Length: 244
Image (cartoon, rainbow, N blue to C red):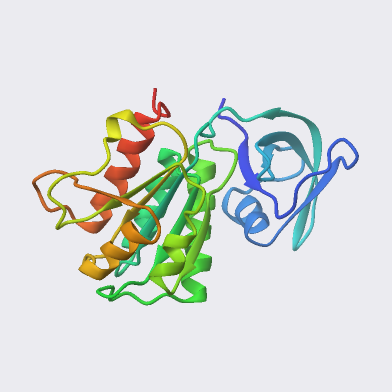
């Protein structure tokens, strides 16, 4: 028997004070029109708190369905250490690929930025799409909390968003020697990977001198931007003990 289908709620569930939840919009459409779920079906609700609520569909209308909560557990798939991925916007659907895979790997939050050599456009509709990708990946990989995706038009604002992280790693194609040893990582970590055009030297200098990032290399070979973002996320999470 397959596990109950998982759905994200828009608000924190106040259980046991409130024992019923309305599914509307995207989540309702997926439940009713895609999965064909009906009254009596068992589902799991995720409200972003880390809790996973078991529920049964009690009523189904034309635009919403009501789920009756029967209990909850605390999800065990969320990373213990926060990793923030900051990546340059990529052409086509490559940014979506990064968001999907970073979510599966266990990244806690994602920032997408524009930079000097970035050729992709950042729009509100693109942000909405990226967050939808994160939500769908969260359900697929059995996580309890969907990473929040943000868009930064200014590269400097993206760097500033990593304030407070214990480690700050900047993957730079023209750096020859890593300034940080990823094999000794402990604590929260922010990582930066560029777009297809890479970084300007002044952007790298800004990250180091004003925001405290350490430059790192990813080996002798030149990686595609999406490969670099996914690979670095995996390496960092592995070294932090999140993939054991």
